[in-house]
Amino acid sequence: MTKELDRPLGQDRRERPAGRSFRPRASAAAGVLAALAILSAGAGIALQPDPFRIPDEPSVAEVTPAPDEVAAAPAAGQTGIPLRTTPADGARTSGPSVIRVNPPAEPASNVIVIRDPSSLGQNLQIAHLPDRALIEQSELGPLPVRGHDGRRAAEVYARPWSGTRGARVALVVGGLGLSQSGTQDAIGKLPSEVTLAFAPQGNSLGRWMQTARREGHEIMMQLPLEPFDYPRVNPGRNTLTVEADARQNIDRLYWVLSRTTNYTGVMNYMGARFTSDAEAFAPIMRELGARGLSYLDDGSSARSIAETLAAESDVPYAQGDVVIDQTRDRGSILAKLDELEATARARGFAVGTGTAFDVTVDAVAAWAKEVRKRGIEIVPVSAVAASSTRE
Image (cartoon, rainbow, N blue to C red; front, side, top):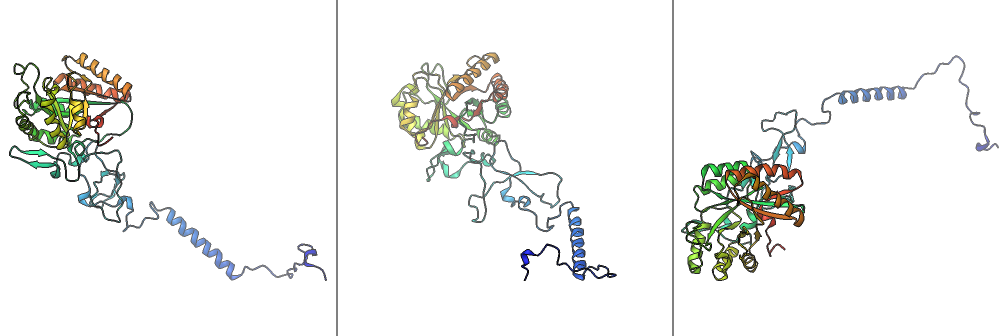
């Protein structure tokens, strides 16, 4: 018997009988027809503008959020992740629309909430609204307090910033509220990263606070403190003095703190004598710590003991390096701002203070545009304040 493996290939084929033509089987014909049908259907789908969309079921990226989760007008620096959405009337647009989603505080278990990790502090969409848990009502008006959960105004009302380790400059412009037109110009012209400080003797502070916070500014209150040549040089109504007892000074502090809300802390206005006297200054710093506020020393007095007292009272503290407008001249102000830039590059950060004079506001606004191009980040003062609870 010949083995199958030894048989020559192709030698066992049968010859087709003569005169008989080849006819494809019915199953083969059916397969050809099915293939043609599939190709035809595929071509029809491919030619449609959006072939695989189900008209009645929009994609996840196009679901319109609930009305209470959508901010109507996003402001610069606010938190949230942009999404592409379908307009409320259901009409489709040719390009994407960008919104900001403000997720509920307690999202459902099946909802994924995406947050910006660099956004610290209060959402700027509601930054003008005081946190009721941080308010104590008094005869003078609202006073800041620590929350039952330990939250402090120093962090809650802080403006978000990038959180990077690059060179940073914090600028604080004070004197707001004293001139209505000057206050409006300062809020409108200064970059939102600049911190604004309100004079307690000013007018309409509640309204200006809300305007400043809506524009993204972090704010502080200026605290009138006794200078060495007081009362010849008088910081204004309810100045805290060395001769007054602790209760009197705390009552004057309460008057300053009650003038508005939503500020992170206070900064000195004058006060070379007061800030050098531990007996007078220590009770005030303890009160600031108990109420969750920060303190900024403008750096104008070498005798100030504010840093030591702030550390003892758990008060977030920052100190100014340069008063930028001691000489009220544009060239001099720009030179001081350049000094701040050099300090920031050498140390990592710098703090400058000034007053809302027209020349100061215009110089800072112009300088800020250029310094960003050189890699300097302008930050709120809270971004450079040291606090023992955060270190």
